[in-house]
Image 1 (cartoon, rainbow, N blue to C red):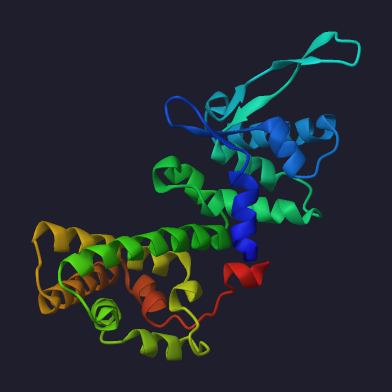
Image 2: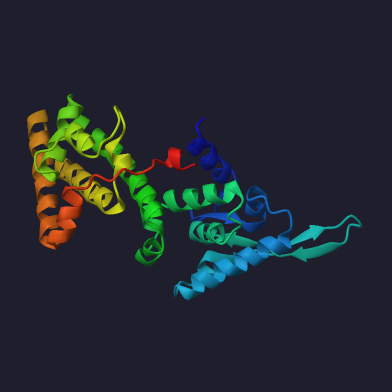
Length: 267
Protein backbone atom coordinates (compact mmCIF):
# COMPACT_ATOMS: atom_id res chain seq x y z
CA UNK A 1 0.00 0.00 0.00
CA UNK A 2 1.52 3.34 -1.06
CA UNK A 3 1.62 6.54 1.01
CA UNK A 4 -1.48 8.02 -0.60
CA UNK A 5 -3.53 4.86 0.02
CA UNK A 6 -2.37 4.75 3.65
CA UNK A 7 -3.44 8.36 4.09
CA UNK A 8 -6.86 7.69 2.59
CA UNK A 9 -7.42 4.68 4.85
CA UNK A 10 -6.37 6.66 7.92
CA UNK A 11 -9.25 9.11 7.50
CA UNK A 12 -11.70 6.76 5.78
CA UNK A 13 -11.59 4.42 8.79
CA UNK A 14 -13.08 7.09 11.09
CA UNK A 15 -15.63 8.37 8.58
CA UNK A 16 -19.32 7.99 9.45
CA UNK A 17 -22.42 8.19 7.24
CA UNK A 18 -25.78 9.31 8.61
CA UNK A 19 -29.28 8.12 7.67
CA UNK A 20 -29.33 10.59 4.76
CA UNK A 21 -26.07 9.19 3.33
CA UNK A 22 -24.19 12.33 4.42
CA UNK A 23 -20.63 11.64 5.56
CA UNK A 24 -19.13 13.19 8.67
CA UNK A 25 -16.29 12.81 11.16
CA UNK A 26 -16.43 13.06 14.97
CA UNK A 27 -14.05 15.67 16.32
CA UNK A 28 -12.95 13.42 19.19
CA UNK A 29 -11.90 10.68 16.75
CA UNK A 30 -10.19 13.16 14.43
CA UNK A 31 -8.29 14.51 17.44
CA UNK A 32 -6.67 11.12 17.98
CA UNK A 33 -5.75 10.62 14.31
CA UNK A 34 -4.19 14.10 14.18
CA UNK A 35 -2.05 13.28 17.23
CA UNK A 36 -3.53 15.83 19.65
CA UNK A 37 -3.30 14.38 23.16
CA UNK A 38 -5.34 17.10 24.87
CA UNK A 39 -8.87 18.07 23.86
CA UNK A 40 -8.24 21.57 25.17
CA UNK A 41 -5.59 22.22 22.51
CA UNK A 42 -7.57 20.53 19.75
CA UNK A 43 -10.68 22.50 20.66
CA UNK A 44 -8.62 25.66 20.15
CA UNK A 45 -7.83 24.52 16.61
CA UNK A 46 -11.54 23.87 16.01
CA UNK A 47 -12.39 27.39 17.15
CA UNK A 48 -9.86 28.84 14.69
CA UNK A 49 -11.39 26.70 11.94
CA UNK A 50 -14.88 27.93 12.83
CA UNK A 51 -13.66 31.53 12.65
CA UNK A 52 -12.16 30.88 9.19
CA UNK A 53 -15.48 29.38 8.09
CA UNK A 54 -17.44 32.35 9.43
CA UNK A 55 -15.06 34.86 7.81
CA UNK A 56 -15.78 33.21 4.45
CA UNK A 57 -19.52 33.80 4.90
CA UNK A 58 -20.17 30.06 5.15
CA UNK A 59 -22.67 28.77 7.70
CA UNK A 60 -20.59 27.46 10.61
CA UNK A 61 -23.43 25.38 12.06
CA UNK A 62 -23.84 23.38 8.86
CA UNK A 63 -20.24 22.20 9.03
CA UNK A 64 -19.60 22.07 12.80
CA UNK A 65 -22.64 20.33 14.31
CA UNK A 66 -22.69 20.01 18.10
CA UNK A 67 -22.65 16.36 19.23
CA UNK A 68 -22.06 16.49 22.99
CA UNK A 69 -22.27 13.10 24.71
CA UNK A 70 -22.23 11.51 28.16
CA UNK A 71 -19.02 9.93 29.41
CA UNK A 72 -18.48 7.84 32.53
CA UNK A 73 -15.64 8.66 34.91
CA UNK A 74 -13.73 6.19 37.04
CA UNK A 75 -16.24 6.63 39.90
CA UNK A 76 -19.14 5.90 37.46
CA UNK A 77 -20.18 9.53 37.52
CA UNK A 78 -21.49 10.72 34.15
CA UNK A 79 -20.32 14.00 32.67
CA UNK A 80 -21.12 15.73 29.39
CA UNK A 81 -18.15 15.98 27.04
CA UNK A 82 -18.00 18.31 24.05
CA UNK A 83 -17.89 16.87 20.55
CA UNK A 84 -18.79 17.82 16.97
CA UNK A 85 -20.00 16.15 13.83
CA UNK A 86 -17.67 17.64 11.20
CA UNK A 87 -18.24 17.95 7.47
CA UNK A 88 -15.38 17.21 5.10
CA UNK A 89 -14.92 20.96 4.65
CA UNK A 90 -14.78 21.48 8.43
CA UNK A 91 -12.08 18.81 8.66
CA UNK A 92 -10.15 20.57 5.92
CA UNK A 93 -10.30 23.88 7.82
CA UNK A 94 -9.15 22.14 11.00
CA UNK A 95 -6.19 20.67 9.12
CA UNK A 96 -5.39 24.11 7.73
CA UNK A 97 -5.29 25.54 11.24
CA UNK A 98 -3.50 22.60 12.86
CA UNK A 99 0.10 22.28 14.00
CA UNK A 100 2.08 22.32 10.74
CA UNK A 101 4.98 20.56 12.48
CA UNK A 102 2.91 17.36 12.56
CA UNK A 103 3.38 15.31 9.38
CA UNK A 104 -0.16 13.97 9.67
CA UNK A 105 -1.51 17.53 9.38
CA UNK A 106 -0.03 17.88 5.89
CA UNK A 107 -1.55 14.52 4.95
CA UNK A 108 -4.93 15.66 6.28
CA UNK A 109 -4.79 18.90 4.29
CA UNK A 110 -4.23 16.97 1.07
CA UNK A 111 -6.79 14.25 1.85
CA UNK A 112 -9.67 16.55 2.74
CA UNK A 113 -8.95 18.86 -0.22
CA UNK A 114 -8.44 16.14 -2.84
CA UNK A 115 -11.13 13.69 -1.77
CA UNK A 116 -13.94 16.22 -1.56
CA UNK A 117 -16.42 15.16 -4.21
CA UNK A 118 -17.55 17.78 -6.71
CA UNK A 119 -21.11 18.00 -5.41
CA UNK A 120 -19.83 18.65 -1.86
CA UNK A 121 -17.63 21.65 -2.56
CA UNK A 122 -18.98 25.09 -3.35
CA UNK A 123 -17.36 27.59 -5.66
CA UNK A 124 -16.46 29.73 -2.65
CA UNK A 125 -14.80 26.79 -0.89
CA UNK A 126 -12.86 25.91 -4.05
CA UNK A 127 -11.47 29.46 -4.38
CA UNK A 128 -10.04 29.16 -0.86
CA UNK A 129 -7.80 26.24 -1.86
CA UNK A 130 -4.15 26.80 -2.73
CA UNK A 131 -3.03 26.14 -6.33
CA UNK A 132 -1.52 22.78 -5.29
CA UNK A 133 -4.78 21.78 -3.58
CA UNK A 134 -6.84 22.87 -6.59
CA UNK A 135 -4.53 20.86 -8.81
CA UNK A 136 -4.80 17.72 -6.65
CA UNK A 137 -8.58 18.16 -6.51
CA UNK A 138 -8.88 18.56 -10.29
CA UNK A 139 -6.46 15.67 -10.87
CA UNK A 140 -8.62 13.37 -8.78
CA UNK A 141 -11.74 14.36 -10.74
CA UNK A 142 -9.87 13.90 -14.01
CA UNK A 143 -8.70 10.43 -13.02
CA UNK A 144 -12.27 9.42 -12.21
CA UNK A 145 -13.52 11.08 -15.39
CA UNK A 146 -11.04 9.14 -17.53
CA UNK A 147 -12.16 5.88 -15.99
CA UNK A 148 -15.78 6.66 -16.78
CA UNK A 149 -14.85 7.81 -20.32
CA UNK A 150 -12.98 4.55 -20.92
CA UNK A 151 -16.09 2.57 -20.01
CA UNK A 152 -18.19 4.58 -22.44
CA UNK A 153 -15.52 4.29 -25.16
CA UNK A 154 -15.35 0.53 -24.72
CA UNK A 155 -19.12 0.27 -25.23
CA UNK A 156 -18.74 2.44 -28.33
CA UNK A 157 -16.37 -0.09 -29.86
CA UNK A 158 -12.99 1.41 -28.98
CA UNK A 159 -10.15 -1.12 -28.77
CA UNK A 160 -7.12 1.11 -29.41
CA UNK A 161 -7.36 3.40 -26.38
CA UNK A 162 -4.06 5.18 -27.09
CA UNK A 163 -5.46 6.25 -30.45
CA UNK A 164 -8.75 7.28 -28.87
CA UNK A 165 -7.15 9.43 -26.15
CA UNK A 166 -4.67 10.98 -28.57
CA UNK A 167 -7.59 12.03 -30.76
CA UNK A 168 -8.86 14.14 -27.88
CA UNK A 169 -5.42 15.54 -27.08
CA UNK A 170 -4.86 16.46 -30.74
CA UNK A 171 -8.09 18.42 -30.78
CA UNK A 172 -7.36 20.26 -27.55
CA UNK A 173 -3.63 20.78 -28.11
CA UNK A 174 -3.66 21.75 -31.77
CA UNK A 175 -2.35 18.44 -33.13
CA UNK A 176 -0.15 17.36 -30.21
CA UNK A 177 -0.31 13.78 -28.97
CA UNK A 178 0.26 12.73 -25.36
CA UNK A 179 3.92 12.03 -26.20
CA UNK A 180 4.28 15.47 -27.80
CA UNK A 181 2.87 17.14 -24.69
CA UNK A 182 5.18 15.10 -22.46
CA UNK A 183 8.22 16.12 -24.52
CA UNK A 184 7.20 19.80 -24.41
CA UNK A 185 6.93 19.58 -20.63
CA UNK A 186 10.28 17.77 -20.40
CA UNK A 187 8.85 14.73 -18.65
CA UNK A 188 10.63 11.45 -18.03
CA UNK A 189 9.58 8.21 -19.71
CA UNK A 190 6.16 7.04 -18.53
CA UNK A 191 5.67 10.15 -16.38
CA UNK A 192 1.97 11.04 -16.48
CA UNK A 193 1.22 14.33 -18.24
CA UNK A 194 -1.92 14.82 -16.13
CA UNK A 195 0.25 14.82 -12.99
CA UNK A 196 2.14 17.76 -14.51
CA UNK A 197 -0.68 20.17 -15.29
CA UNK A 198 -1.91 23.21 -13.41
CA UNK A 199 -5.50 23.44 -12.16
CA UNK A 200 -6.73 25.41 -15.20
CA UNK A 201 -5.23 22.97 -17.68
CA UNK A 202 -6.67 20.02 -15.76
CA UNK A 203 -10.09 21.68 -15.70
CA UNK A 204 -9.96 22.06 -19.50
CA UNK A 205 -9.09 18.38 -19.87
CA UNK A 206 -11.83 17.38 -17.45
CA UNK A 207 -14.34 19.34 -19.55
CA UNK A 208 -13.07 17.55 -22.69
CA UNK A 209 -13.44 14.19 -20.95
CA UNK A 210 -16.94 14.71 -19.54
CA UNK A 211 -18.31 16.23 -22.75
CA UNK A 212 -16.90 13.40 -24.87
CA UNK A 213 -18.41 10.77 -22.60
CA UNK A 214 -21.77 12.54 -22.80
CA UNK A 215 -21.62 12.77 -26.61
CA UNK A 216 -20.66 9.10 -27.01
CA UNK A 217 -23.69 8.06 -24.98
CA UNK A 218 -26.15 10.61 -26.37
CA UNK A 219 -25.27 9.97 -30.02
CA UNK A 220 -25.02 6.20 -29.44
CA UNK A 221 -21.59 6.05 -31.10
CA UNK A 222 -20.88 2.45 -32.15
CA UNK A 223 -17.52 2.43 -33.96
CA UNK A 224 -13.96 3.26 -32.96
CA UNK A 225 -13.56 5.72 -35.82
CA UNK A 226 -16.68 7.66 -34.85
CA UNK A 227 -15.56 7.67 -31.22
CA UNK A 228 -12.11 9.03 -32.16
CA UNK A 229 -13.64 11.66 -34.44
CA UNK A 230 -16.03 12.70 -31.68
CA UNK A 231 -13.22 12.99 -29.13
CA UNK A 232 -11.16 15.10 -31.55
CA UNK A 233 -14.11 17.37 -32.30
CA UNK A 234 -14.84 17.95 -28.59
CA UNK A 235 -11.15 18.72 -28.00
CA UNK A 236 -11.25 21.38 -30.72
CA UNK A 237 -14.43 22.89 -29.27
CA UNK A 238 -12.79 23.21 -25.83
CA UNK A 239 -9.66 24.71 -27.40
CA UNK A 240 -11.76 27.29 -29.25
CA UNK A 241 -13.57 28.21 -26.04
CA UNK A 242 -10.25 28.76 -24.27
CA UNK A 243 -9.02 31.02 -27.08
CA UNK A 244 -12.22 33.03 -26.92
CA UNK A 245 -11.79 33.42 -23.15
CA UNK A 246 -8.66 35.48 -23.66
CA UNK A 247 -5.37 35.48 -25.56
CA UNK A 248 -3.16 35.43 -22.45
CA UNK A 249 -5.11 32.57 -20.94
CA UNK A 250 -4.84 30.56 -24.16
CA UNK A 251 -1.10 31.23 -24.43
CA UNK A 252 -0.46 30.04 -20.86
CA UNK A 253 -2.41 26.90 -21.57
CA UNK A 254 -1.02 26.09 -25.02
CA UNK A 255 2.65 26.61 -24.23
CA UNK A 256 2.79 25.41 -20.62
CA UNK A 257 6.08 23.64 -19.93
CA UNK A 258 5.98 23.83 -16.15
CA UNK A 259 6.64 20.60 -14.28
CA UNK A 260 4.78 19.88 -11.06
CA UNK A 261 5.46 17.50 -8.23
CA UNK A 262 3.10 14.55 -8.06
CA UNK A 263 1.17 13.87 -4.89
CA UNK A 264 3.63 11.14 -3.93
CA UNK A 265 6.67 13.35 -4.56
CA UNK A 266 5.15 16.14 -2.46
CA UNK A 267 5.17 13.88 0.57
